[in-house]
Image (cartoon, rainbow, N blue to C red; front, side):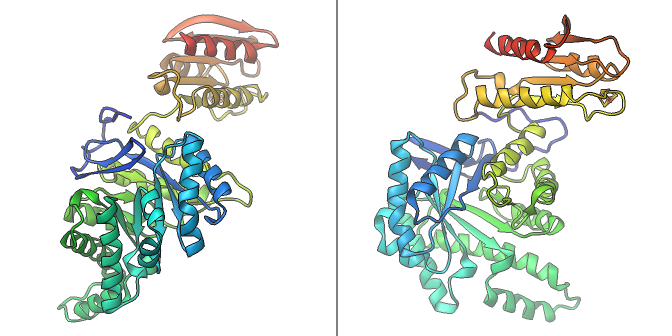
Length: 412
Ligand code: SF4
């Protein structure tokens, strides 16, 4: 993918190093001049290699450019090469990221095929024990990363912050003439933990171009403050995400609020939207939300955008909602992110409007648009193509005819 021109109002992207995450000749670039990368994480049991491979495939086909899987037990580590093999057999080359906590040093050491099959390791320095044991465990993981030439994400998390570091920083804070509040010390500790562990990884031999950082918290204002600070203090690429964002609209709104502010300021090189799925819900939703954030902000383009008015008392029928929905579904089906048949068309805008008030105006601004008749209006629907009024549809098959016009436009 190429980076879109800088949208009006957005700050230039913060200069960072570039990290390459590779599998089988496919290279995903994170940071530097690369576009913001979308990633996601499976929620299957990694021991179930088939179910995990299927979900990775679904996430990749929805447009996830990196997929993280948990590697939490020897049984899970043993299955990672099988998952990779399944994916390769299915022609899915998305790089896999292994998520390690507590025992990553053991698993990566004991299962070299797992270490090799993964394209990147996520290390949480807050979950590696304490004191010398922690240092040794961290060093073992970095040693494996160096041996297999894999990049790592040093992912610090509010919920699993290094206790010793936190205690030391709290102690130092109490000696300040004007101590900070505890939240400010915690935010600082997250940043210090991420950067000091990255420096240590470099001392242990890992290339600075093999390190991505993240400092995840679950509150919007804390996340913005932490990442502003982190970005000012290092040039590693940054992975953004509001951890434990929550369910449904709450998770989407909170993630969007936090990430949009940071992205607008040029901060963030890869994003994940951590949504709690509804029972049996579709995991790919987090990928679609991430894409929609980036596309709405003009930072990337993934799929044609359908603009639809919210409807009001001027339109009593649901024809336009149904039409907007079916056009959106059609465009996603015909132009899946993973297999763009129409390069360039993913930036297309389609308008489906409910009445004459804003219908013709919005339709003219779109590449192709339709203004359906509202209550009391003449039952006709003018269609606009490239800003010009093209045809006027009438009768009971307006929806089908408009869909055909969109299809022909796309083909052209
Ligand atoms: Fe209401 Fe018409 Fe505006 Fe749609 S375009 S919200 S139907 S006034």
